[in-house]
Amino acid sequence: MTHKPRLPFLAGLPLAVAAGLLMPVQGRINGALGVALADGIAAAVVSFTTGLVLMVVISLALPRGRSGLRQILPAVRERRFPPYYVLAGCIGGFFVFAQSFTVGLLGVALFTVATVTGQTLSGLFVDRLGIGPAGRRSITGIRVIGSILTVAAVAWAVSPRLSAGGSAPAELLVPVLLPLLAGFLMSFQQAMNGTAAVHYGTPIAATLMNFVAGAVMLWAAWLVRVAVAGPGNPLPAEWWYYLGGPMGCVFIGVGALLVRSLGVLVTGLGMIAGQLLGSLGLDVVFPVPGTVVALPTVLGTLLTLAAIVLASLPWPRGALGRGR
Image (cartoon, rainbow, N blue to C red; front, side, top):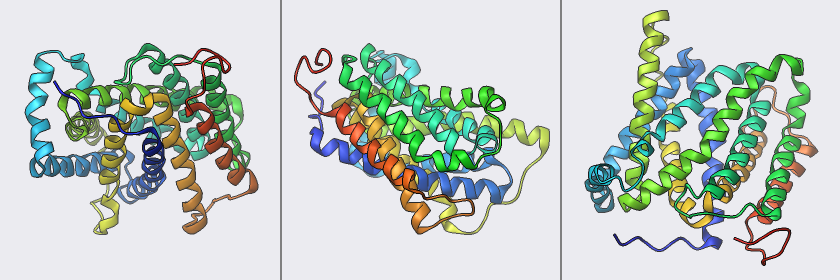
């Protein structure tokens, strides 16, 4: 099978940051939808379902999409990659579960620190194992330092919100494990989607399968909830409530495209930087009650960008560890 050439590094990293910019916007939209529906799981179902519908349309309308559709069954049947990779979307569904059940208790700031910590640690691990399409990438001293700085910078950036919380640290120890695990699994999701995209010949098919798996999981969870507690509020009429799913399509598709060129760690770090920049922009332009934009927020965001540059640049062999 002939694969497309990899995206150049200098183009790939800014694209990862740009995709990350959508994450806080998507979170703000899905959070508002959850309030409108009085049901966080229902909001996730709406988000995944709209994303799935869009991916079906794209897959049928574009030649690359149709070509990718024809490769899905042969790729799975011939075991070009482990068959369970098609379930990568369930990780996205689990992430939404973690978000729904813990953000109210932990707050957005602590949730962000927990998920970023998990994702950064697993990014190193996944690259070392060579699970993604980029192959094995050594855990060098530079990459470890960059990863530690990223987590520290994110914690610094959200520290004004952390200090505004009222819960005791001991009370948050158990709840914080859920977003930590969700973040840890995100790197595996990107690696699985990226590998599948290589064998499908396009990230369009990988993104479609991601939404199929996630939507099935969330619909099943929502139906159980309805059976136990009954339905929530009716769907709102405002069109912008339904943009979360399409934004997720961009985020997942770009991630599946970039992990082959940048590796899982750098792709994840780039998206984390975009997430912080997007959050900062939202808090400045469209603040909500409780918004805190302080000097640590700005400086922590800038330090995150510096840490990502440190971890992602092709340093010469022998620079604080073996090269790739």
